[in-house]
Length: 100
Image 1: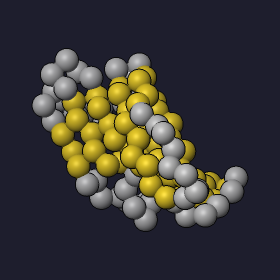
Image 2: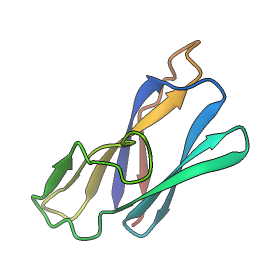
Image 3: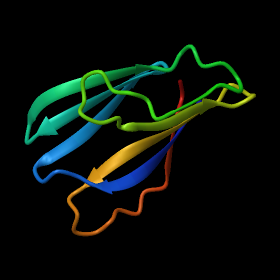
Image 4: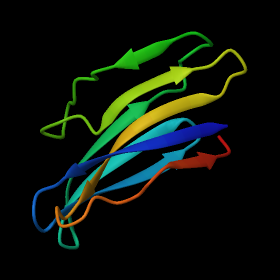
């Protein structure tokens, strides 16, 4: 199981971040309008129970959209991701749970 928490952050006007999961590999894509500008892939499949990562250095994006990830003792992967919004009103996002 993958439990995702989103951290709201005002984003660049006209830009958005989209996330896609394949197993325990996360792909974050930065868009301007409908155009994909750059992708960052985070392979979290090697995390073992008790492992944690924070402040991941991005290779492609100008920032890391992965705030933190940790693997719980039961194998659940907990991930915190940035959630960009347009700056007008902070979204009331809580949590998302995926099979993975």
